[in-house]
Length: 327
Image 1 (cartoon, rainbow, N blue to C red):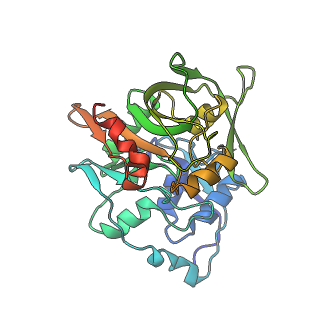
Image 2 (image 1 turned 120 degrees about the vertical axis):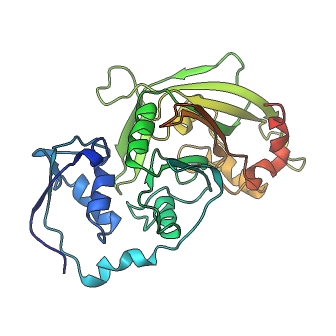
Image 3 (image 1 turned 135 degrees about the horizontal axis):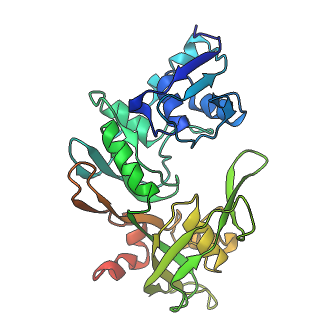
């Protein structure tokens, strides 16, 4: 039975700049991810005697206090249930791996999700000494996802994301004709929790102390017309390339909905009546895809231009892929 006493862990140099949740998931092997996130949210985990969030960045020498964690032996064995799974590889070398994440798969376990992409990758590659997420995508979003294969590469790549020196462009299909003159959305966002603990985001203003500045650049790629059997008043749709200068939770989804052009199939911030029509016309998921990602190689410094093609369920729908031929 696992140790049920309070524990103190000292963050070593290799773990410096890692997120608290990732650090604990590595240190508390066999502990369900839902429990790890629960003890963080409850404040039972302390960093240098202070409460910390899951995304708190640790520094070398930090003291991490863990509460008593007691589990039956069968819970310790639970990780064996994670299935091995491979994903389409967009780029790979000894330092990093870029994959094409499908929609409907979380990037990691936790908060009610038993496992995600990273756990499945680790099971599929048991010989890999390290596989860590560099960044995240929403479960409903497909596209380019970076995984570090060495701790030094993880830190250097995450530094690029934090310094906003990466280029992240998404494809989004939205309701209505996007106004050509609107090319920048600079609206702060505020994260909050629903009563059941689910994350949500809303727009706010500069006076909100919890608001985070959020910037999205929008470019029109094409106008998509509804199918021939759609009602006469069915709206046209705009295929957009959205480049985010800040990587806030649900940023594109909230920004576009706030602008009056919700993303097709978005079940959190979208037009739910319109979504039902889209489902009848064959669109079974949210039309948001992490299309292109530009980063500098963490060791060589050379530019990497990564691109994930539109998956068939999006590209084949109303022949949307045709708009990308000259992009």
